Image (tube, rainbow, N blue to C red; front, side, top):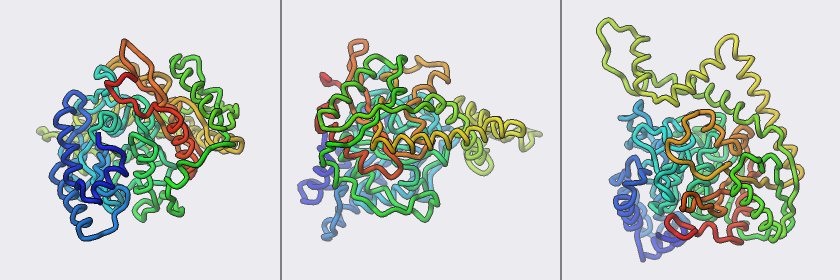
Length: 489
């Protein structure tokens, strides 16, 4: 499409292109190609063009712009931007326009990037296929009958279809890494607190992190570098020195210790997924890395832990959307009381998956059940965090599949529990607060069509530099990231 982020930025800065021209190129592709995919809720073309014109003026004035100068970056529809719609994929916020910018939007603009549009997501970021968007599902560019993953499916699909060079998503239990895997792109979940959540419509505030999608590790690292950092608006951000995540990307990984948890090679995985992991192990051995066999026995309790903590936090966060303080309000009926108005507004505004998680969360926080469920889940959370700390004493990075199978058909999983299990390899990173990345690792043919497979790497908290170096060296040793929908992958 347009080359790497550095290529785009170089031609904008040297005058062979402009930020406006790069944005228009994306908008033209979206208008032409996004119809059957449905990755964008809106393009925000007018506001984006103003941002692009401002970049061009800064360059013309001789301002020193960074490696994101003029780069269009799409934004998930649960990250607010001033004056533009943010629906969170929900009828509850159908008409909401934000009065302020999220910190990540501000940081991108400061870095010379051009944030634009809103990409579709599962309602309030609750889902694993972007089927639960009130405004329509997103389709996987590799096979339009299949899901792109969720909840950041629109952001992943937009990058995979080359509608934009990069995008932002949010990851609460795998919502960046899982769609990155199913769409064949790179997706990073940063360490908890590495990126400000200010302006992210919250699902689970102790789990949520904003991160980038891109077509290469270096591109994703450049976006992460721009949005990372402490923020006075978010007390959970980490006070750590600013890092250039690209400086060590190309350093050899000879001697790097890569842990292979036995639990990640489960017999229930698709055969192609386990074969992909074994092939990746051999690639890393060829690069001089040391493969260390490890165990993570609490892998299988992660889903249960997550689906207590996440819904408990969601039930509290979404209480404000009652039709009075925020959100969709139905027309009051004659003689109707306040609680009846609440119930009808919330029943009409929220979809079935959001209602399910609100009810589950309210239940586990209720009197008599708090200790049995929520308190116990917090105790298990500490054990999961300790398990990762222990295993990272033996290795530098963990390797495994991002998902247990390639993309499934839209509408083929009706059982919520089966849907939740799609995230069994990703949720524990959020529970423990560590960082993770999904990178393209090949394809498998299903029904005559190639479908991408993703390799997940995980590293300790604030271990992004090592994580990205390990990912980039695998990328350099293979050509999986070059595959595109419609190609002979």
